[in-house]
Image 1 (cartoon, helix red, strand yellow):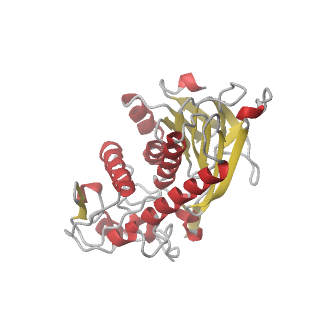
Image 2 (tube, helix red, strand yellow):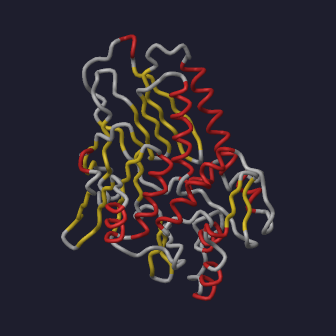
Image 3 (cartoon, rainbow, N blue to C red):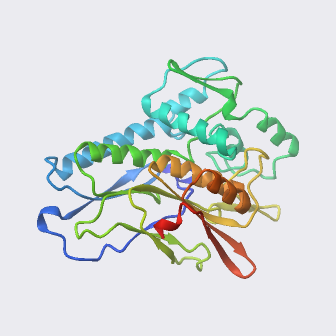
Length: 340
């Protein structure tokens, strides 16, 4: 899924930190697996312990699971499940896979709660040139945006036990803000089915960690400094996330300039416009990497003050960074402080 990088690698990388420590015992040596998926890469670190499965067999199962997720959710695979749904006319119900159902259900839940994550924004993403289409020669007109906004919204999706349908023609799904997180959850589920509880799974910068390393040290994850010099990556601060998914969203890597204006890939579904505010990094912890992934995008679109309020009301572990004239300003929610 080579071309999917533009959509699915929209978040900057969280770096695995602090693997040095006491020498692990030979019976519980850390193993690593790497591969490609969703237009990006995956990296897994785990300790097999007493499980009977071999590393080769486990990696084959991981690859098969990620291929299935990609076939379901990639808009770059012509016959993918999501493209089949996107091609449907209104009011036609389509049976969907369990993978697809889980992502749709969580997308609707977050979309109804936060209002700033909308997986029906496929046409709007394309209009701004952040999908498979080329960048527009000029800014879309207010009339174009109004017409587009009228045709999107998770309220136009109907999910039943028999399948999924949409109430308007032309509505198209895009799981760019949540699919990587779901892929991580699927891999984590697969790993745990084989009795492995100490692991780290990363896809395109999003992660999920569980247990501890063989030296009994916790997994440590570093958040990247958003205003590091071009071409350099610097650690901002280190977390001990426990057994959680970790997702970070930022608006400073994917953008373009047009007519003298800078346009970021993060779009507010309520206005149809790319966001313009000083919130540059949002990190979210959640037991589900999929949920953390979706929430990180939703909170980034909100901006600093709305994101603070939403995080506290919903007791979410959230860490925010915004640009100010004096440098980077940080804020951590009450639920996030134990992880610092």
